[in-house]
Image (cartoon, rainbow, N blue to C red; front, side, top):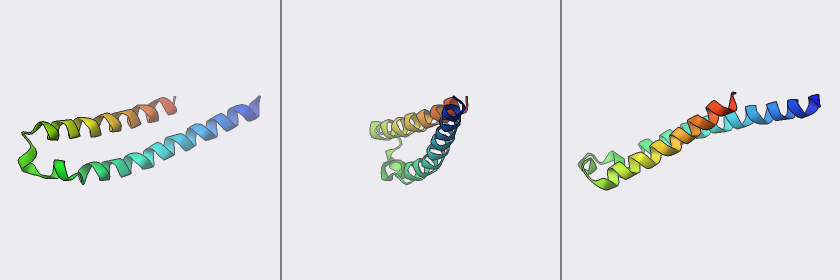
Amino acid sequence: MGVFWVVVSMLAMLLYHVVSVYSMFWLTYWTEDPVLRNQSNVVKQEYSQASIFYLIIYAVMGLVQGLDIL
């Protein structure tokens, strides 16, 4: 039974670190989006949709990290 919990703990740690590293890549991808970098797009709906999309994905990664450490 102890081996099972060790494996679960290791997988949880691995998942946490994978999501952590991927969130850094996601932030880079988010900041380099051509739609969001163009300041003239600020009033367009495409701009807000892109922002919401990136924010939702980033929030989900944060939730996964938060749940993973519980």
